[in-house]
Length: 214
Image (cartoon, rainbow, N blue to C red):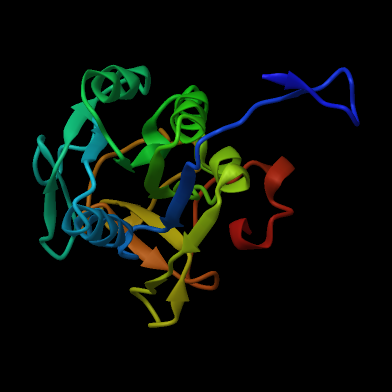
């Protein structure tokens, strides 16, 4: 590292070229499918790939990332983002895939930043909004740091329009705002909804100013 001539107090560091790609959107928008597609292309290009997902996601399989369309790719299920560094340091890896990144603690931001600055290509997929329509976990920060963002939309289960929201259903009825953030499920618990058809019960008055929560 060398001191900057323009800004003597600053430090410049020569870094290898890493990259952060974020794939986001609501449930049923094809996030995992797109992640798998990119990882498979990297494998075809003879790049060394390692894939991770949060251990909470056991909907289809514990040891792979799976899309709603049935596509799968082997993955390590972990519960803390720091374990990604442990796995990567054990062997040479060029490309790291992370599914359901929204479930990880905010420290995943620092883990990903370290990987990118060490020259890795990181592809992370996750929900940008939780079922309340609020930015989900570390996603807002990751979106601002990303070199590339793909924001996908699903199809509204009610009217067929583009759907940016994940509607949680409890016994077929909209969930309450006070319900827990995380509830692992698929079509039995969630629907994709457009802004008009999305609804949630018992929204606190302080945040009812958001039009989609009224």
